[in-house]
Image (cartoon, rainbow, N blue to C red; front, side):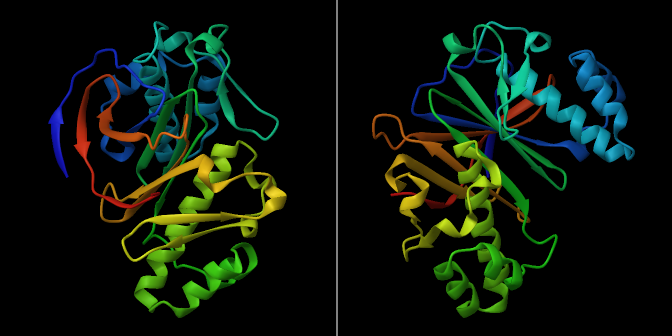
Length: 267
């Protein structure tokens, strides 16, 4: 990964673009910085942070909220402390500021061991998922229970080392899709599936009962670090393929725009 510095300023976001912000929260240990983050939180967020028992969980939550608030303010003339949020009927977080309809900005968040991923789009649905694909063993039992039959067959035919990686490739894509739909696990995971072609492209199939079309969505998958796998699902705008830009940052301190090697993407 190549990187260059890009300090705080407003960022423009076209309808067909996806911006991804990465923060390795275990590396953000400065207590003065934590105190600055805490000043951005709402009373409800401060209460939620205090409820975590382990310091690592407190830090993850604090950095996540600071990342979300400061990043959104890069795209709109709203201060980090002024953002308000709600959840939809399925628990998906959303912007609830009165100007939200004017902004047309949406976001999605995922986190795993040490890493937070925040995706931002404009006028389109978005889902992101990140997993540490080496942290736990892939489970064929889970795949047989939740995945589509074609995916299970491909997992069973894969070599052991390849099976571990492929399981989490499927898992992150599925999570990204159901998060983009905003309906969580009310969408059965075996009613849609993914397939990788020899050139690395990823194709999607959807059962008619889900009332959706694969052509509606664009997917990317990449590794921001050796043990991590990120999947992005973004709604196509006027049939455009869209673009992906990735930053690694420490909120309120520094950021780098990354040149990532995409492993798999929609055609």
